[in-house]
Amino acid sequence: MNRLGAVAMALIAAAGVLLAHEAQSPAAPAPGKPPALSAGQAVAKLESALKAVTTLQARFDQLYYSMSVSEPLHEKGDLFLQRPDLMRWNYKDPQEKVFLYKTGILEMYLPEDKQLTRTPVSKEALESDIFGIFLGTMSFGDVYTIEDTQFPTEAARVRQVKLVPKTEGDFAHVLLEIDETTWLLRRAIFLEWAGNKREFDFSQARTGVRIPAKTFVLKVPPGTEIIDDTAGIKR
Image (tube, rainbow, N blue to C red; front, side, top):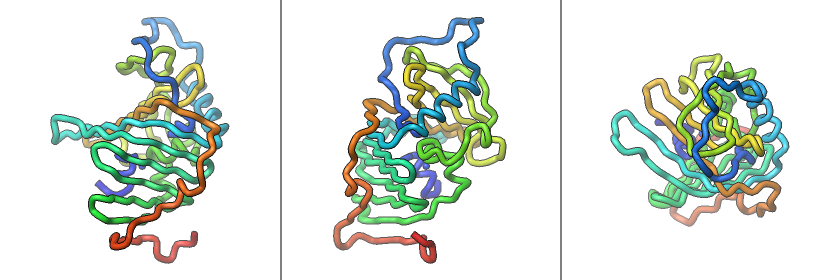
């Protein structure tokens, strides 16, 4: 898995506000009853809600299901977003790590390994992963074919849609669960061609909050190995 893929593991959502209320009671559209909005209209509302976000702070649970491992890797932490181009994922459990995105550059810090890696993030990557959703770098309709779908959920008043990439990439398709009250993202599931799956669940989201500037500055202790792949890139 490449570093950006790790972000998606770790990410790599606007939820930006995207996030929605915590799950309540099981609820799925009644069989045969058409939804009030089409899949395309629901995604358009999500896109509008994300564009309206200035700052976001939320909790996240990330699950990575591998075809080669019986139990998923479950990670959790806090997400900080300041649009248009600042995002930080603080992983707390089971291993501490930080993913910091700032204007096209991703910094990945692993305290346990005493290592910091800086990597440029391509436009193609931003349009096909969780980062692009949060940062609003693309229009869903331009990048995906949008379809209706249903998948297991414990949440009430949500709209579920399926996004099929118009250009072949890392993912076969993406499933989104959108809160019908706020029209923010509650859950995102990325299905890889190989059968692996990445899932992001968001909760306790607060938007319009003041996020200190130092949140988006990554300072590491002396002795940290720094691997910089951004030589020659203007910042």
